[in-house]
Image 1 (cartoon, chains in turn yellow, cyan):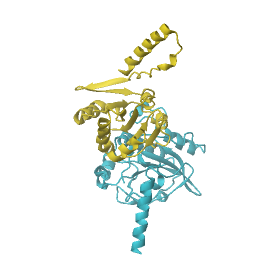
Image 2 (cartoon, each protein chain N blue to C red; image 1 turned 90 degrees about the horizontal axis):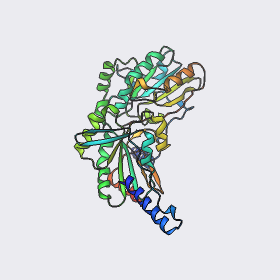
Image 3 (cartoon, each protein chain N blue to C red; image 1 turned 135 degrees about the vertical axis):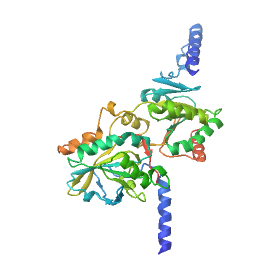
Image 4 (cartoon, chains in turn blue, orange; image 1 turned 120 degrees about the vertical axis):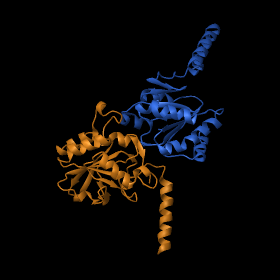
Length: 183
Length: 202
């Protein structure tokens, strides 16, 4: 939706600009559209878009008035699965308050269809789930955060002004507290 | 005396809790790594100093349960086959607390070592005392050590190679390149890499 809306506004404002002849081009800056997924995995009404890190970066540096909570996890990672309900709760509770959870799965490619998709369906995950398909981890890990040693779960909380990285598990209270610092 | 110990423990736990957000401490390239005495799957204790004719060691923190560790098992066996005879044997250590991670129990380690025909020691970090000194945070996590007059010097820290998913699609073999360089008396080309792994459960 975001992809189509902005160009229309941009077009409308361009028309308005033309008609009154004022220089106000800067008023509307369209957000970069979401990159094209490498592949879309689907089964049983659930689908997940796969991105390499170049594609994923779009979701790590959006410049709008929303605070994003990007959690790196995998179905095989026990502490990740344990904390997922906290991220789901946060996403649900604050969905009207410009807070958005993005769950980036680091499952293996061959397990997307056998593990990840069934997991999303079974748990009825409501947060957006993306699949990061980029095995050259040493190339992209430091771009998420230079202090990240590679253990998961790991979480980035950011908005256009602030950014914080956590290589740890969260309780719901801790997560809510950290996100409240971003308002 | 007991009270002092107790208070000390209390303080230590408090300090640990206070620092958990910071990156784990541990060795950097150039540091001298500690030796250890840990129980192998054959019930014998193993120390680095006991391994004869070693010029260094490929210390791999790995375990049974982690899919990333499993993805690398065969490649770890290949590393040992290639480098033990050249003086750089693999020494694998399971850092997980079996109380927290049942699949990483000593009995299951023995079973896994047998199934996969491990040619190297597979040790249990009983009490989880060794991995924090190294600074390992996940499995697999490799430390290449070179035996020198001042001790076992850390020469490489990180991943085995650049593709956990597909051994055939690997472009850069970090550990092999490091050991090859050491064998030739050269500087290790890439001294540190990052990779995803399963966080260690203490």
